[in-house]
Length: 347
View 1 (cartoon, rainbow, N blue to C red):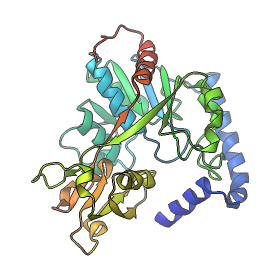
View 2: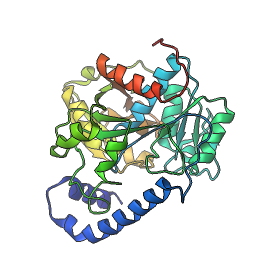
View 3: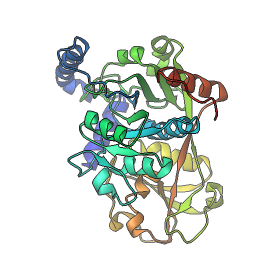
View 4: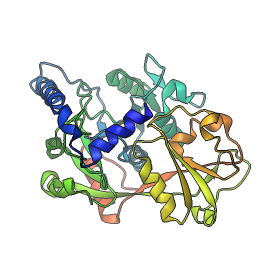
């Protein structure tokens, strides 16, 4: 599976011609998704409004773009303003058949890694559900005023009041092709319908030259800031990443774009041995047995799956979304305007 993922990623974000072989399947995928969206737009397939504002944070590409840190940022900022926020997720890999409230007793096998991370980070009510409508209704039963959907941009059955598209500035839209020939889940034209477009990092990829025109003043830039390394055995204090300089470390990442994590560590001067894993990889102790006692640094998302066998070698590095003051105002003003009720100006 890991080899297949690496091959696809190389094709989607490389310059090779292998994608041409899959273009007929991409054309079929485009036709199916276009018909499906049209059926929702004309009402043949109903989009269901659940009675509370729904904000969807998603991406038009496969793989990590930074949407989960953005969901956490939004949840915290809205909560500071007195809004009762709840988080809704598909819960990739979750074993739950019915909507499941993520509580302190939940395991990542039951609810998925990202929902558990979001619940632990924000403390906000979090529900995982394959049926997003049913999941949203369970959040409402918890007293939630606003629902933040982590992913679900293409889950059109759940009506939404605000759509936020997140794009990786370095990877852009890859080769610009639809699945499976490229990383696009849907046409880039969807960006023109989004309420906000958030570019994670500097928009350096050539395919992002069209963003300003498509987003029409609704585009902002986000940066993910790594925090201190947190010991996973709970027996020591946190360390700055700079304190690992001059020391070789193992870097573990089972996320959509491991290269971003490795690059963050190297930018702080660490001597990194890379260990990329597929997104949502179910870690076992053997995955982290590298034959030495060097520190092992991993993402917060991976840490929720490794806490049961943590030892003195293991640390995780949380990341926090950050915007400029001007872009913070743009994001919050546009989101709050979609809620349909007055919001406290604090925070």
